[in-house]
Amino acid sequence: MTILIGQHDVVTGYEGEKKMQANREKEVAQHHDGGFSVPETNSFGHTFRNYDAESARQDGVENFYGTNHINQTYDFVKRMREEYGKLNRVEMSIWECCELLNDVVDESDPDLDEPQIEHLLQTAEAIRRDYPDEDWLHLTGLIHDLGKVLLHWSFGELPQWAVVGDTFPVGCAFDESIVHHKYFKENPDYSNPAYNTRYGVYSERCGLDKVMMSWGHDDYMYLVAKENKTTLPSAALFVIRYHSFYSLHRSGAYRHLMNEEDEANLKWLHIFNKYDLYSKSKVRIDVEKVKPYYLSLIEKYFPAKLKW
Ligand SMILES: O[C@H]1[C@H](O)[C@@H](O)[C@H](O)[C@@H](O)[C@H]1O
Ligand SMILES: [Fe+2]
Ligand SMILES: [Fe+2]
Image (cartoon, rainbow, N blue to C red; front, top):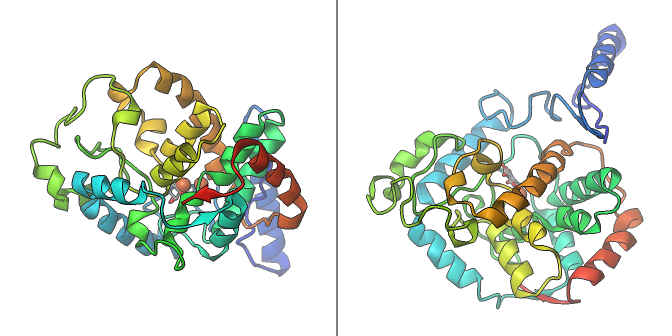
């Protein structure tokens, strides 16, 4: 995959030429990782996932994490899982849900301010280019963020802090590697001895499916896919449920809660993450052109209508 760098620079004349040349050089200097080229900067000219860079998005993103970290408690997650796990809100197809994401912008993301349908297709198409035979992973790319429909006015209308952003376990100590960790001090679970130790309510190698994750689009989409009896492999469900769990897949925290199956699936999550993160750009995908391919995958792995 090759992603153009520097589309944020709107400069003309000699200065513009110089900048373009510098960008071309940067492009050549991209880190190569197998067939995959990881760009150095996002569409705003910063490194990816730079939560401290001063940018138009930074304040909003930090406010987002403040509210998120204070409110995501063990009790909150339990209530949300019970409530949304009923799947009694809407019946719709996977593609109908993709279209709803046309209206959804994620406030937690320092790297992207495009409607979410763009991100779904960018991720899926980038995987498809490098892993042409893994059709299940293409579909996983397409659907991994569909849970953000919880933000949609016609649906859950949940606040951003209860839908997007990185996720983390609740019911045990919040790891230091979690973005903007300082805000957890105001979370009631932070000072609750039942929930603030290394294991908390869990036990060694209990398996991640026993672990309650902060509530949001990942866990919701996992429940939707599982309860609607998708035939996608377990690695796909793993990717969907933990793709925002950066403290695990990037920082290696919480591995003491993983079992053997989790270890095997984590390899796919590492692959997936590169595409999820680094395909974010201003390059639009032609939706109508790729739609027939994705409809065929949806038909292969999902019922025509799902309960949401
Ligand atoms: O801001 C982003 C966004 O909400 C993504 O969908 C999520 O997967 C990431 O973990 C998060 O950093
Ligand atoms: Fe996500
Ligand atoms: Fe994503």
